Amino acid sequence: MIDLKAYLPFWFSGPETTKLAKAAQTFWQRLEDALWNALRQGDISQCSSAALELHAWERGVSRLPGEPESLWRQRVQHALTTSIESGSRAGLEKILTTYGVKNFSVLERQPDNDWDVIEINLDPDALSADTALLDRIFAEWGRVCRRHVITHTLPSPVYPISLMTDEQQRVETAL
Image (cartoon, rainbow, N blue to C red; front, top):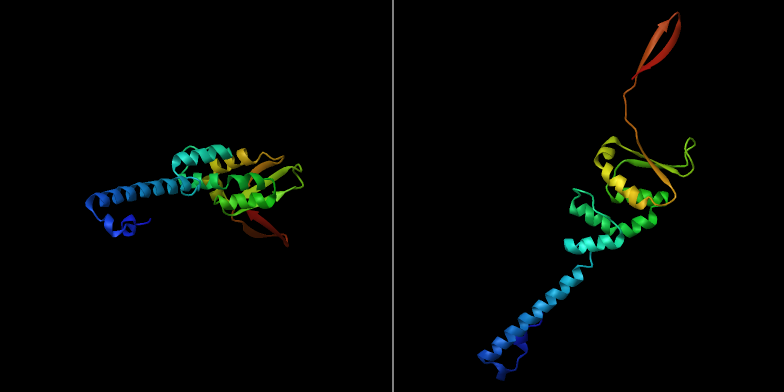
């Protein structure tokens, strides 16, 4: 901000003029702060909660119950790219990575399924932590002509046992 007192000529050095310069300085500082605040409301990462709700309404995103504000801001910020890219495999992988889902694989057009089914294989840890978020993502941005099936694979130990019976060897597995 410009210091008005430094630009006043020497004959404006009285006490009333100094008060006027200070009042003008305060006015322009408040105006500048208000303009910067209005400008920050357009940036989703810095806006107030009320402005964030307006941005979310504009993008068609609703908040999950108990969702932290940081994740809410992230979902609103990426809503446009998410809705555009949700129909492709690469877009779906990018969406899941953006929202912090780890260790997943996206399988399309599997032999036993219909052609429009996308199978998303998740770790059990990711499935338990992000179930509500994934359901909301597929409800809002899965509006393409594809169906999403969430699966998971549980690792299980396999113990092979070798048995000798009548000079024939047989291998069995125990789960």
